[in-house]
Length: 594
Image (cartoon, rainbow, N blue to C red):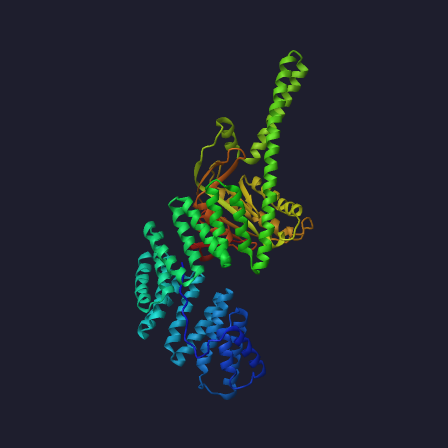
């Protein structure tokens, strides 16, 4: 969903960055002049870098407070400049992700604007407060301050800001599944945006109505609205919003199980994000494409896209460095494809060699059956080969599944009503791998994953697969158990402890932190592939487990509400609140404490 950002009127000039830099120099040379407050107000308002914006807004606050003490006066537009300073301080902190400090600054802005009698700024900062509460997942407070802002904006007949506030409030109702309230807000904001002919507002309004329809299962109405929003946005070249709505169209087609069209829209979202360097959308689009490719039976390309997702997700550097990472990843993919092809060749050689050996052994046994010594030797060879074959199969598939494959030649998909799924990945892995030789990279990953495998075996849990630096495991299958959630928590703790200790181990030189996410629920399990078998699981439970991992923190185990209900009596858990999850709305999450 998308929100319109309200632009507040200020008594400052609209200067570009060059002029802002010039004003910074003027301030350094005239920091004690009578115009210093106005200069700082302009700089903090127009500066786009959050750190610089915060620095100069704090400078303005310090200057106002020192001048108030010296002059002992409360007039001379003190509250005007103070409200402007705290507003920009709040904006800077919000951009930095310091949401609670941003809210505190916004409230101080409102106090000053109330004293100044500036109702326009008071209503505007209420929207900023509500937006920030929405960002941290506090829907109750967000709705409260949206309501207060809307009352003031109606009173002042501020159409554009009222329309924007209604749209943002409707977006919050959408996040909390209050669809009727959301539609009511979108309907009113749509009328206002139409009256004032504000194209971006109209587009966001139409698109968000489409999002509501999608949540309600009205897929055709949803597609019509989102497509109309995209058409408007193309005219005003708002490419970020276009990428978001193309992604939403992919989500709708995936819900309808039309994977071909879902993949087409995911690629279109990716192409827009790639063209305009929208890194967060690049990450999301790659993840969606990876999931759809896996559903379409293309695991190699799915793996490549998942690695690209990781690279863009972790990227906090410039485009040039991202490109270096991408080039490295391409080389790694090519090497992996070559390795996979060589493994397939080796497997074919082993298979036909084994057939040939068994044939020769059969002939030898027939010719020499009277000689008991040779017969016993032959039987031992056959038994050893069979055991070796069985062990190889058990390394790939669970025992029950391997037996079914041997008995029937295929494996039927099976639904499990309660399974606990774990995802983990390493913070900073992409940066660490960037300049590492392939052999060292493989050894480093093997060092960690081998230990993880032993931990899973210890607790009788099932390793599902690894993708890049991600490790996936499940409990409660292939045999249904009741304590799988508890066992998975214990295994996750040991994984985290091992990674923490490995920081001080000279074997790899790596200093990773691990993020772990866990969810419990129903899944479908089965075997994919006809030559290189792979045991895998599917379902919303798996997707939510992945979201738990991406919303975790380094060194922590983040679990869903469903898992918490299974283990709450046996483990000390810390409630994190309801956190916004993309395409999922608000989800309760908990950290498992040591």
